[in-house]
Length: 235
Image (cartoon, rainbow, N blue to C red; front, side):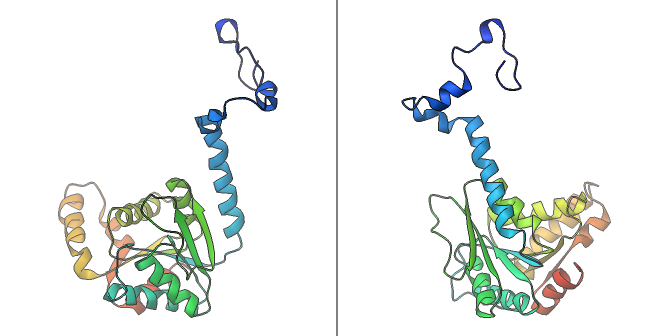
């Protein structure tokens, strides 16, 4: 018997778990196996929960890492971060450059809690300098849990595949009732118009979503309306 697993006949292993643990000269490759990864994954969940448990009300802002500082959406994200912080909301982003940096910057400049949840990628740097509470993750799915667990609302700005993933993750959790407070607001009507029309004319028309599902989010360029939607309706 090996812990909860019963092994007999050809499945009996020649060594015990204690032997493997105490054998200092053993091959280090074991730390890269799937059972060991479970422990690493668990440690990331524990670190995230421990760090963010006392965060209080928060809004997660998603958007592109490629947005330059002179782009109108950078300034919009900065203003949104400031507005949320002034209303007592922590601001959570992916902690990277572009839109994420702008939102963190706005929150930090307003004296608010500016959270960055980074991810290990070969082409992205460490957390931006405006983050005052940050965690770096190895696993996307652990990071996504932290994005949604501690936020009462989601603001989605123009972005690429990662932003699309985060948008539909938020909508799916709201649609299925997995997340009871999940107000979603898209910023940038021109950018999102094509997606909105496709969802309405194709997805809804084919019966793959219901009419009420279209009411789960708004799309606006009015930043005050956006903040009111994700904060007021979430409370």
